Image (cartoon, rainbow, N blue to C red; front, side, top):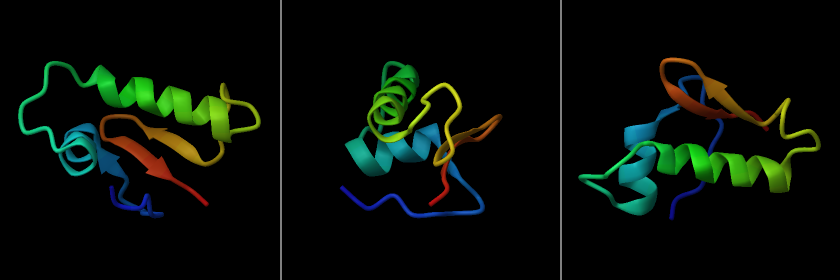
Amino acid sequence: MGRLRSSKRGSKRDELLDKVWGYEHYPCTRTVDNHMLKLRQKLERDPAHPLHLLTVHGLGYKFVP
């Protein structure tokens, strides 16, 4: 699994599914959402108001160190 790096661009759900889990065809993009929720619960002080694992509406997710 590759490292999550800071990017101004962010990462699309499809890219995460392909690069992290190797899914070419997947049943549901909620897989990424559920994993991000669990990561936020473990890593963010206030998961409801994340500072590091951000949602980029219309794109996917972005890591801010």
